[in-house]
Image 1 (cartoon, helix red, strand yellow):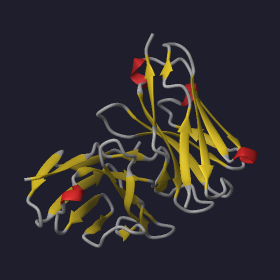
Image 2 (image 1 turned 90 degrees about the horizontal axis):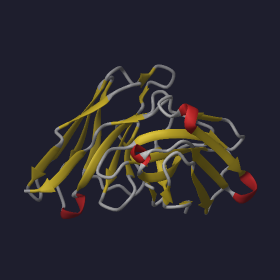
Image 3 (image 1 turned 90 degrees about the vertical axis):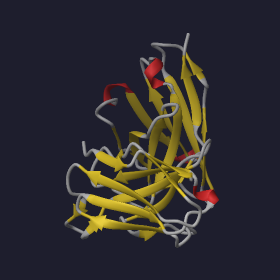
Image 4 (image 1 turned 180 degrees about the vertical axis):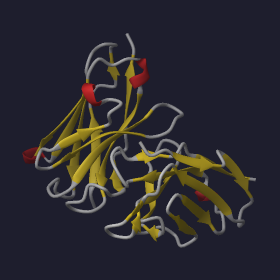
Length: 113
Length: 121
């Protein structure tokens, strides 16, 4: 199985400041057939299911604010919230869908400082 | 707008079989892959298995011998059975859709609200 490791486990950021979450995969998730990185990012608020934010490592899902951006390739990926809003308090997960079983990072909790 | 809803018993006894159904509305179950994913209380996400509307399935090797996934296209539903449960199977169970038609290796774009299943005598 591909292991996805996120850092940090939690972070506190002031409103309007940048939040950066990192994710490393235990092997490359760049698919040679389509030249795409099979990585997604999800946001999960308490009592809710995960919400897809980013797929193909950098493509925003429909309706996701443009303060959320994803980057990276191969084994190293980043989710950035450019200007943290109160409604962004949540746990964020990265996920690889390069192969089966799809696997998730352990999650990063984002709070307001 | 596609909606998914999990249903089933919220309490299962140890050694018995957990059974859940996911009902899809607002869209057809056809042409997509659908997965079950679980989340123990306060913990992360674990993929359980997928099914394709044609009936093909696969599951996580860590659970494979205990997992059965089936589909009923006439009802736009698919189901999960997890046998020989223990307390470690206590979790919120989600059903989710793979983002693009016909493609297995995709992110999950629609999720159910989740069903908490507690394993306890």
